[in-house]
Length: 144
Ligand SMILES: Cc1cc2nc3c(=O)[nH]c(=O)nc-3n(C[C@H](O)[C@H](O)[C@H](O)COP(=O)(O)O)c2cc1C
Image (cartoon, rainbow, N blue to C red; front, side, top):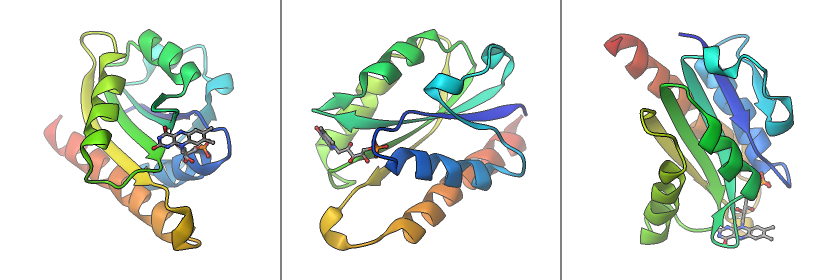
């Protein structure tokens, strides 16, 4: 399955998670910022799309790019401040899904909650993000 990771990142958190996601998917998976999206993006079967929440909403550039994705399978991963079980998270994810064109299938969603007070969590965050990616791919490949 032709797969790519695309991310939006301002301070670098989502970029790091995106790189971990790419490693979790497998070897030699392209991991590109919004500025580096290849012109043949539509030829990918699956896009892992990473973005962050800013002032209660997904970042503006991601909103624009999500509208243009025609890929059948999209896995979303998000970084944000708030705890993983709050209703707020569900609302943010639902809004992101609403930006996707009809016909896209959401094949996975994943949140990295950022807790600055918890100290350096990078290793754990990256390991869990890689697990998400590996599990999503495993599920996709065993059902197609
Ligand atoms: C100006 C600003 C506004 C933010 N607003 C929110 C917010 O409304 N809700 C939230 O959960 N996180 C918010 N965050 C936290 C970011 O989503 C979080 O730090 C994210 O990991 C940043 O991603 P990046 O490092 O890839 O740019 C905000 C961060 C900044 C700097």
